[in-house]
Length: 245
Image 1 (tube, one colour):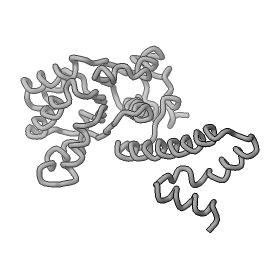
Image 2 (cartoon, rainbow, N blue to C red; image 1 turned 90 degrees about the vertical axis):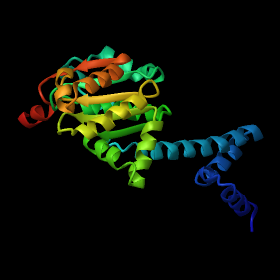
Image 3 (cartoon, rainbow, N blue to C red; image 1 turned 180 degrees about the vertical axis):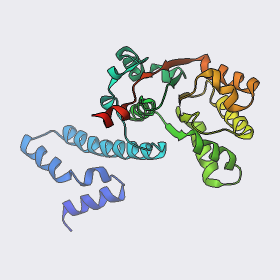
Image 4 (cartoon, rainbow, N blue to C red; image 1 turned 90 degrees about the horizontal axis):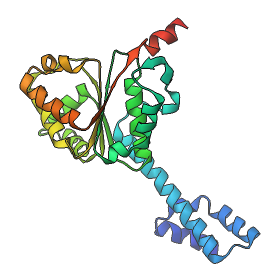
């Protein structure tokens, strides 16, 4: 076995798989440039770290459960009121996430509330934060089944350990009293331990009726609003605009 082949086997045994693919190129570049040993070692370690970072990013994106890929560059900010370029810059800064602040997006369908939530979540993951995304309808199912289904229980545990929890489409489907209680308990556990992003087509004044308990709803909103940035979006639906064009 050649020394090169032995090197490849050693890399495999040490689980340095990120070096395997670019190894020949790294060696060739080092020989051409008469690179120092330290420079060569640096390139080897950098290749391994880049591969591990890429894999971690893919795992985190998969674990977040985003329904689709959305970025800020795809969002047409001038088409709606209630959300400005200054707001966008402050969200992208992510200091609110370190401070466990919440982002609440309200407005009618088609204005990009979910788009903004996903784009924010993806940016947070790229910056090293743990993120979980769930539509409210699925989240309520998970909460109800957490004690009897292992997969649901594991998912709720991951949500509770997340730095950012995105809860989408509150207000589109009815919420039963038991579901509302479970949701309140979740928000209480996340309070000041994680940031929450919520998208909803219903204003605060409609939440008590939706949840079926005014006292509990008031307590929930108190927790959500204590450290929150609120965005009331308005304008013409992006989907309607696209159809008309």
